[in-house]
Amino acid sequence: MKNIDKSKLVLVHDADDRIVDQPLETKEIGYYRDSWNRFKKNKASLVAFVIIVIIFFFVLVGPHMKVYKLPKDNPTEALRFGNLTPKIPGFDRIDGLNGTKKLTRGKRFLTHMYHSEFGESIILSGFPEELKQDPNHPDYANVTELTVKVDYYRYQNYIMSYMPESYYGIIDSNASGGLYQDPLGPVRKTRTKEEFEDLMKRNVIIDILDIKSSPNPQDPDNPFYQYEVRENQFMAALQQSPEDTYFWFGTTNSGKDLFTELWKGARVSILMAVTVLVINSTIGLTLGSIIGYYGGIVDLIFDRFVEIISSIPFLVVLTLLTLRFGSATWVIVIAFTATGWIGSYGTGRMQFYRFKNREYVLAARTLGASDGRIMFKHIFPNTLGYIVTGYALAIPSFVFTEASYSFLGIINYAETTSVGMLLRQGQATMAAHPHLLIFPALYIAILMIAFNLFGNGLRDAFNPSLRGAE
Image 1 (cartoon, one colour):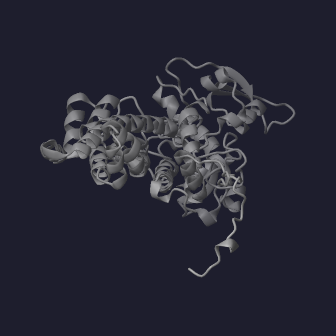
Image 2 (cartoon, helix red, strand yellow):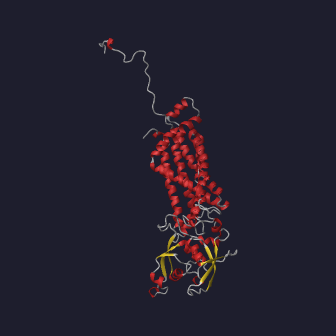
Image 3 (spheres, one colour):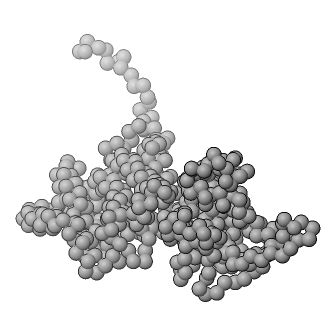
């Protein structure tokens, strides 16, 4: 190096040239923008997010989508709509979604219904050809029951509107049978046979009050008939078309639309879940962050207090409060927040205790940053992934827990429908009416899976250590 001729060393640039760094061509991406970009790449979480949005849409709008004003002061009238099967427009060829149902009933009753002018077209399939031709066919003399496929809407209309007196009790033990008489006094309207058949085809719920016949000189075997019927009052008042009589999820045993009742129950449980989450996170996270950051003797004392509170069984708290104050919504909220904030407290305390001595925190403290700035500017973003994940799982956890205790009868709302109560009603009749259990159970399952996948996606998206990673 000492023997190099210095005259041969020349500058690449002139002395007057100014060398600067090239400007960045890309835009700066903030923390939350980068989190959203990572979240979009997780397809499972993105689909789960869409499902959650759809669920919340039905929670808000679902109870108002189907307008049914079923009689509240006349339980017998409401039984007309009890346990109807799902019927969805456009699914006419799918059994279970087209209003049809397979039933095993007495041969005597089914034969009478098939040959009755009021039971026409109710039986869709399964009825023997021999009995169609001869109700007393000898081949079926010893047969007592038959399994047939029926239009369940018209079938329910038949047994509640016209069931011959001699056939009482053949269908169900709770069937009233006979000519239904409204204690408030029926509205009589005279219909001809053709008009009556038209009402049956349109699934209009009616009562057959009286049948009058007069001779037909031209055809003595087919006299003229007049039917005095009472059309259902809410159907006439709302002027609903035949398509509007469809119950998408069927009806409950009390005649209420299951689609509407399910979303009413979901609304109650989700609103309560959000309320509990806000209260628990506000109390728990505030205390946890302060205790975890400062530590010391305050941490030791408060930790013992938390151990005492957490040792109280939740079921004991819930049972005592419901026995004393009933199952009002505010009672349930208090029960879930009495010890529920401990989870948020533990998460906040652990995360702030974990990050408070990291190098970037020490550097910020050296530069004179206040405790508040360190806690919310430097530590909180690093704990956000764990906190958000825990909160995303808290909502379905509350819904599942509330539904479980409602199913067991511990939570029993007086005037409010919950998903757990629908599950309990469906479990009692799932053999005969499985739709009462299937739809509430599907809602719970989809909600749990969607929130779990959504929470996992949020955890990865808000993890600062993955910032900029592909």
